[in-house]
Image (cartoon, rainbow, N blue to C red; front, side):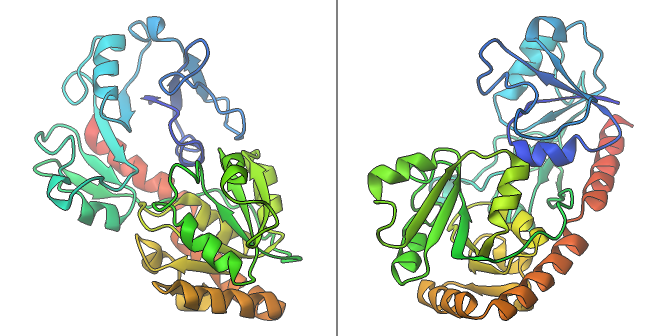
Length: 323
């Protein structure tokens, strides 16, 4: 099949384009959120092809994978086809709902032509999906290999735009844990803005690493003793799964889908930041414990979040909408 899809979340898209199809990705001059084209920091196969909007109406596509509400309008404008009627469609919901609980009705809740694919059961439970068909396809990632060394006596944290997403991403909790004497290093897009909010070296903030290519991110992250996942509100976070697959022990706030994703022998999941801090100190002091927990984390991640299962689940969903 030829599948139209926007480059929205690079890590997730890396897994999706690992399937057996051709993936048509819109590209615009200067890129931008509706025309990023191929990823520069991810290793995507040649089956991902860039097509400018003015050519999409003349480009054969068999289905569209939607990820944002306004893409419904973009498909109609750029291809002349209506998703769900003229063009088979799936809508992948990456995010948790925002605002008051009473307002958590999904934008596609009032239709039944386009199935909503939630990336976690937590997401599916939080959203009011109305009469839309609903399925859950959990994350799946390519195996980066066992990379953990734990030589750096610090905690690795991955978060994009940590200042804007301060409480959502739990950065206040991360800095609280760091201030207890368990230093953190933060990776992601926009992490440089933390330097204006927290002085590097003070309060346990040991380093900032801006938007590294995925392969280098994996190599650097695996050098830390453990991975800290302080998110209050997100569907899950691919970086958590990637860290587990690298062989890192995990310290996670007991929120979102983290309690379901992290088994008891892979680290500590707790709603209490002080308990996470105590666990961090123990891992920093006991590298053998960190290694054992990291190996358990890797076994679980490979079994539950392996790429073959992810690709197979999407094959089923795509065949159903294109039948």
